[in-house]
Length: 327
Figure 1 (spheres, rainbow, N blue to C red):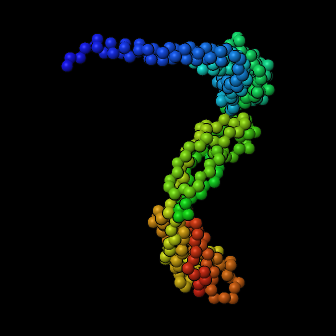
Figure 2: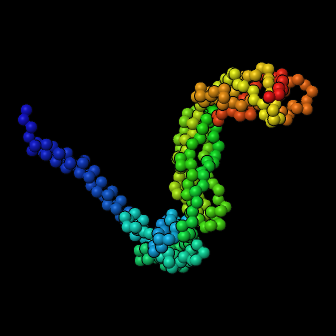
C-alpha cells in the first residue's frame, strides 16, 4: 500500500468540515471570543494592590557603612486599571526607590526620609494612571557608622530533643563568630549574636542546618547567616578503671596515700566518645580541707573533672582509707 499525503489532507479536511465538527468549531470560536471579551472587561476595572518596593541608597561615602537599610523596602497600596497594574507589577523594569544618602543622613549616624518625600519618589515610578491609596510608612529611618566594628561569638537559640537512645555530643557553628557594625554605644553593649529560633525533635543523626542571624536595629552583621552542625551519638553506660586518686590542698611536705590508690568511675556518654576516653582524662580527688578535722580514718572522694560529652560520672566507692605521710 502506497502512502500519499493528499489522502491524509483529504481525511483531515473531511473530519474538520463535517457538519458535526463544524458546529463544534463554531462553538469553540464563540467561546474564545467571549473569554477574550470577559478578560478585557475584567482588566478594564480598577483594582487596588499592595506592592513592595525595594530601597537603594546612592552617594554613600566610602567612609560610611550602612548598618541597616540595605534590605529596606516600602509597602504601599496603589490603585489602577487591571491592564496597567498587571503590566507594572510583572514588568522586568527595576522598580527601586533611589534615596540620596547625602541629602537625608544626619551627623549622629541616623538618617530619616519623610513620608512626603517617599510618596513623591514612588509616584515617579508608577504609571501616570496609578494612584497611591495608602503608604504604610510614616518615615524611613536608616542607620550608618564610619566603620566602627567588632567581632562577637554566635550562639544558637532554640530547643533540641533527641531520640531517647541518643544525645547531642557536639554542636558546631560555622563561622563561630561574626563581625558587627554599629554605633559605638551599641558595639559596647553587644557581646554575642543569636541565630533564629531553631526547634527540632526526635534527632537521631547528624543534623546540619543553615540559619540567619537574629536582626538588631541599627546593626549590620557580616556574614548574616551561619551553618550549624549538630552531632549525635548513641548513649552508653561504661566503666573506666584504674583512675588514680589525687590529694589536693595538702600541706607543704605532706603526701596523701589512699587505699585503694586507684578507683573506677561509671560514666554515661556516647559510644564514639567512650572509645577515646583514657583514665587520665578523669580527675578523682580527695580534698584535705574537707577531711583534715574529721576523726574518721576514711576520706571522701569526688570526681573533679570529666571529658567533654560525659553526662554523668559515678564513683564505685565514695570513701577510702587514707594515710598522710611526711615527705
